[in-house]
Image (cartoon, rainbow, N blue to C red; front, side, top):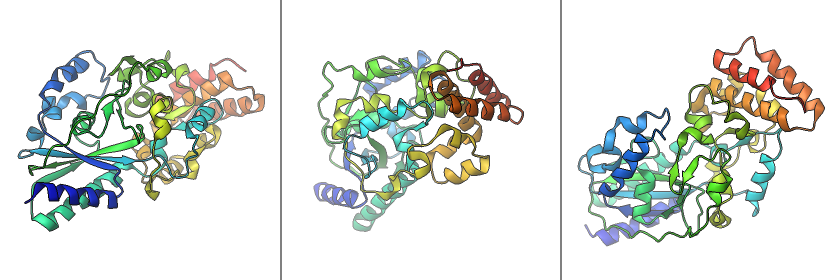
Length: 360
């Protein structure tokens, strides 16, 4: 096997499969272990107990998948092809409309787990056809893998102060995936940091979840609260969530590097009409069957109908706090009141909070 020739062919295959870039990382992540343990010790993982369940295997690829000697890291842009050149302005405008809902950009299309995993598998299959069988395993945010750490070390970008990976030509609007392999591929070089003195992401965070550069307290992060958190959302944080019902992109939308974010050529990430610019009251009318139908093949489905209703109730409450549309407010209160009797205890708590918000 000629490692350089293999690597060149892999890059060609990756581009053909829709990946924006691939790179190769070594498996020695020992220097990242103290920071990860300190993050866990501080309680910043919240109720994401899975972050600690596998211990340091997250930072030891050769223990997670015995025989691994390299990790092929992959970047896949997801900004929809239809996004306007001033897409960031569009996002700010939506956040300023209290009667509408905001879904994180990445979740408006097909579930990225499926898209990346299938294409990583095809990348491995193509390589096997050329060099014969080899040990490999694909991951996409689905196992104890230090994705950003591996991506940074391999040169896919640098870690921004919001803890996400940044790329000069891709911003941060991309997914990451990994292919653990037992092939001694040449390691690619890391790139330098280009955040400088900028702290836009820290300053814009609605809940101040970025407690310091490169330090995120997930317990305050709206993405965590609307997706990972299973229970009651802390009342003090609810007003800060605005109309965000699934995820939060503020730290990415404000980032200067995302002026250069590349749009995706893949139809998989095209925005679904129901999620592109949704109206809160319209989403509130969805039955569980409607929810399952509209979110089929979407990452949103994994939070389930109960959390979806919980998040909507908070957004409706915030809408009542900020709208000048009296007619909408009357309709919203009626819709919330009408759902009380059939709501689960969790959803009922958030409906009652919404109804307690001051009249416009």
